[in-house]
Amino acid sequence: MQLTDVLIHLNKNTNKTEKENIVENLRKIEGVIAPRFNEEKEHLLLVSYNSDTTSSLALLNEIKSTGYAAQLVGL
Image (tube, rainbow, N blue to C red; front, side, top):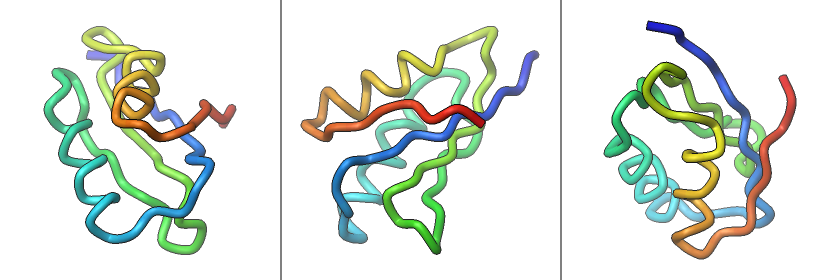
């Protein structure tokens, strides 16, 4: 198992319900360990995942598929 973190920037601030939905959708992806929003910078989402099972691109595409504009940020 290869644990990896990725930082995803959402182009708009989201409310609590939207954040919960995004996190819940990411948790459904096999290999996702811990998706969580940054409390101080609410437009940043850190996701820990098993890179043997999924990819940062798959995570980004899941967010984009729900209508959010987002991009990967280098760590």
